[in-house]
Length: 229
Ligand code: B12
Ligand code: SF4
Ligand code: SF4
Image 1 (tube, rainbow, N blue to C red):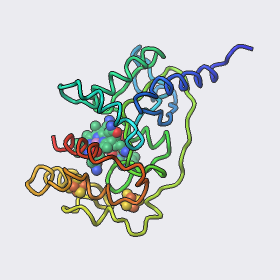
Image 2 (cartoon, helix red, strand yellow; image 1 turned 120 degrees about the vertical axis):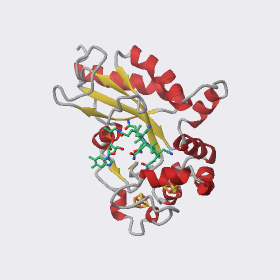
Image 3 (spheres, rainbow, N blue to C red; image 1 turned 90 degrees about the vertical axis):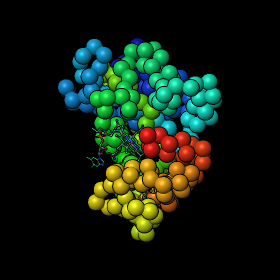
Image 4 (cartoon, rainbow, N blue to C red; image 1 turned 135 degrees about the vertical axis):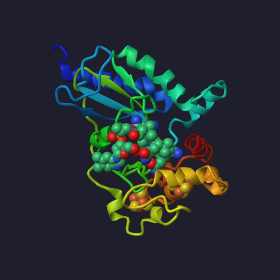
């Protein structure tokens, strides 16, 4: 019996996962699009599906830090992510998208559909198991449907009665209505910002969900430095 389209699509996702293993980047669910609603592929048609790729906790830190020892240019994390993901995209005939490349693709909207993640008061999406300790390194667009992953229906913030993220920011940038990006950025550029820069965002650190996946001190400082730029 020959393999059908679903088997081929499953084999592609498995091949992508295997090729990414050494980098610590993982597959983070897929979004299937109705006709014409997906992002544009390299051949100018619109994608049928997008497979999200990202880190869970510090998964990428060993491979990325080692690579960074030999790199002295701009945007190290995006450059490394492209060096890992672009050859894989080519090998599986997919179009790669990257979160920091303009025009910004709606990574968070995709993630809400791919894994059912919900926004936290910090603006970043919260994952029921790993909390706020994850991010996206890229995505692959395909001209066919790939298999969607597990979709969570539980929103951790609903059961969090104390909501310590709301009371730990020195400039009250974290609010239930919306995260106040400019208060946070102004503070990070001011003289008082040292504790956030050294130990990471107090609100993110205070969240009880996924504490085992918390980034290391070095990774936290790296992301905070990027945020100040
Ligand atoms: C510009 C940008 C910033 C700016 C402004 C952020 C802002 N809140 O407006 C700055 C530099 C300040 C920033 C900071 C950070 N960012 Co940022 N940022 C982006 C970037 C490049 C573009 C955002 C955007 O406008 N997208 C375009 C729109 C069309 O996409 P979208 O998916 O529809 O996104 C919007 C919706 O999700 C909407 N939204 C939020 N909640 C809800 C709820 C509902 C129901 C709906 C419908 C929509 C919605 O907000 C998004 C717009 O900001 C994205 C990557 C990307 N391509 O999305 C990362 C991204 C959102 N950032 C991310 C992160 C991790 C951070 C930081 C924590 C960095 C750090 N130090 O570690 C901080 C946290 C700041 C904060 N609390 O928001 C992650 C979030 C991952 C996650 N777990 O959700 C992303 C996806 C990058 C990545 N590589 O993973 N960021
Ligand atoms: S502290 Fe509570 S409300 Fe805040 S992000 Fe974490 S789970 Fe959600
Ligand atoms: S980084 Fe600092 S200023 Fe910004 S939201 Fe977190 S605690 Fe507040």
